[in-house]
Length: 115
Image (cartoon, helix red, strand yellow):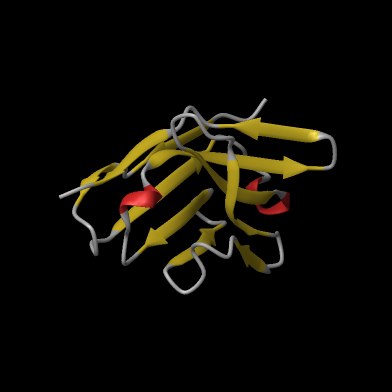
């Protein structure tokens, strides 16, 4: 069992930045594909960004050019740098770890973009 703990959420004004972190309780963190998902009120959970164990990344069209996912395997941590935030980015952001049939989720961290 892998535990994922997100941090870094909060309230930010439009145009601002936040960096989310997700720390994993596993010594084999490097094998996992790590993803960030988000879920806004009344909407389905959606994939925001992902990074594979070899560093390949993918992004939702809505965040391309504004968000950057990265990982530090020495720290068992994945990050999501979010710039130029918009009100529509408001959601609970979840960290996800995937490897073969294994699929783990964090508890989520709230991001609110509002003036």
